[in-house]
Image (cartoon, rainbow, N blue to C red; front, top):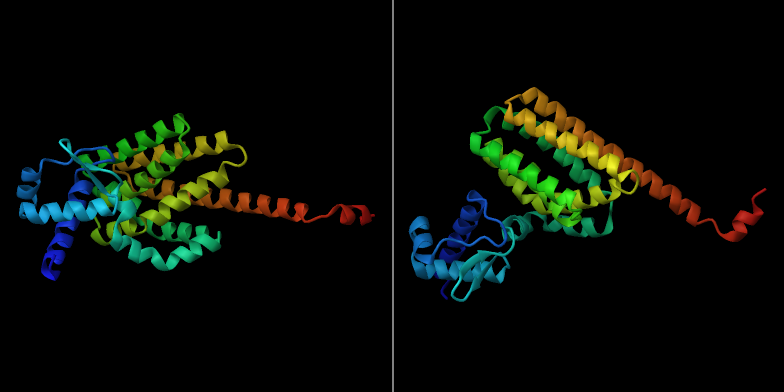
Amino acid sequence: MTISAMRISDQVADLLLELVRDRQLQPGHRLPAERQLAEALGVSRTALREAIQKLGSQGILISRMGAGTFVHNLPTQTSSLHAQFTAPLVPLMRHDPQYLYDVLETRQMLEVHTAWHAACRATAQDKSHIQRRFDELLHYQHIQNTEAASLADAQFHLAIAEASHNAVVVQVMRSLFDLMRNTVAENRRMMFINNSSKVLEQLTMQHHRLVLAIVAGEPEEARCVITEHLAFVLAKLSEADADIARRQRLDRLTPSALKSTP
């Protein structure tokens, strides 16, 4: 393949990713037939096949003989551009659990404003998308699929950012999606250590109020709810950290140290 052809396939791959996002295709969903895709994207079928092969090698798409091409993984989880954006943070994620607070602080900077704009600008389609993401979250929580619930939680917040119709914010949120998904999973794990049912009930109520505010077009209410939600998450994380620290201090007490205590 020539350098020129590689560049074309990269461009077509990006177009395919946008199509998957725009049509809100999920893992297992089938893409349109090759001829229809080529026409929709305005590219040759050769360039399209190369792009499909490229995304297949990244684990985003999978082609099945006689059945067609299907979404295998969500593109926001595997986009090479987004991976480059977050690559410097990977060592921090692995070795410093406190990075959770940096991600949460970044979310506070972004999401308070995006929720406000989403309530002002969301279309009927945006509202339906947000509601669907919330329903998915409820479903996975109900069947106690923690991994899927964490992903649905992150996707719910991303859907709100997309409803803000701010292209820069949407791109930043998509780039941070992996970070957000991983930290949401860790946040939920830590918050559910104690009183998990009560914490889950409060989180669900906050998410529901946020949906209602955006659907009703109430920006101030949306801003208040997301601020309350993220503050609640921060408080619960701090409590969990304090609890873990106390247990670690207790574990460091050896039997001899306990005996010497007056």
